Length: 274
Image (cartoon, one colour):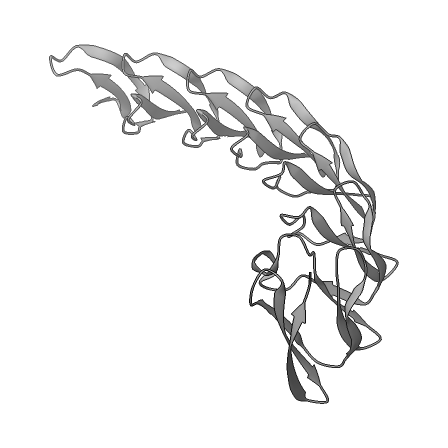
């Protein structure tokens, strides 16, 4: 770099001027041969031959991500540019979260959330009060007007927005989700079929749920201060009579070890499920 009159420019090893000294600051070139520059308190990007691929027009420009996109900020709003300096999204968003492996990013504008892709196509309209990250099954828990539901990446409504809560760890590998409505908890699947009726004060999947069995769909339930275990067809495997903790662990494919607490005493037994 070279400084003249307090301004920065670039010359090559032979002293040939690549960029005239017009910038307030030039930052080091990255591995892609791009350098961030500052001019009149605005940020831009130049390449190795001094061409402004992004004119100094932004308050901030972040590093490029794995999708080849960089967040830009102007007047408190966020947008996106690509590595060629093309504006993918104008700076209109209050938040842009990281793009996932499918090339989708959750965005916020005027207190509403939606989803865009790497071309700034609106995948999910900005209609929601909250949107959680898509899981491995391509499902996202969303909130609107104080009610929760589930959508997929095409904006298909998988679970109608009817519930007061949907646990954020839903859905598990069996496609079951713990939900709450009118102060009672139950379990639904991805077709919105009621697996365990919404009758309980509390429901939790066992800590070792996936190791216990990928078919049983066991859930520990609580009602009126008592605990028991219900399976995915709603049958009570263990009566709701215990006033303390219940723990489940795998012995074999058909045998489950149960440790249950009653009157501050622990009981251990083996549950056979054909």
